[in-house]
Image 1 (spheres, rainbow, N blue to C red):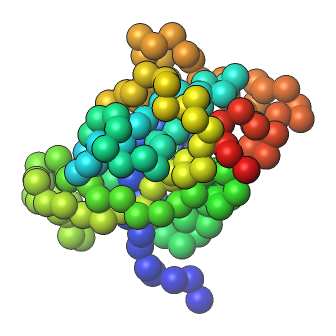
Image 2 (image 1 turned 90 degrees about the vertical axis):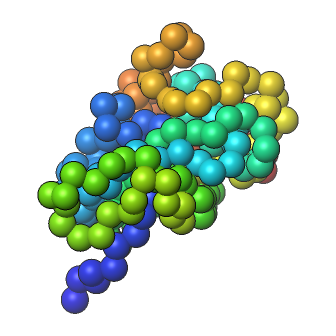
Length: 176
Ligand code: PCA
């Protein structure tokens, strides 16, 4: 039987609406995802762009960087399993909790519970926990945009060299 459990995920990078990997969250073959609203981390964390493919990473290093803006989505078990695989959890990104201040006003038309503005909610996010020291020398962003003024455009997976299609060959960001 399909589980009805929903999980809140905070996306800060290419999974956000309008960003290059958002389509995986709208593809119902992967499970279901519902946008709940915008949010901001309650604490400062470094959000950087790194690797030859210009991939965004939230580094698990509290107090550095800025409070990061992103989106809260409600996902089912199937989408959670899909995203874990997609993000290489736990061998590349690691999914773990993060506290998020919810920022979006209710419209009154939502189905189900929606947090109020200013409410702090616990979500799951895809961290880079074991990162190489040079990652902390990069620019710390507040709000990721693949086409932003940083001039580090995201290289989509299909455009990468064939043997670089999976994360385990990206060796310049993660400390083994
Ligand atoms: N995808 C995940 C982690 C970084 C990325 O590009 C996200 O958008 O939150």
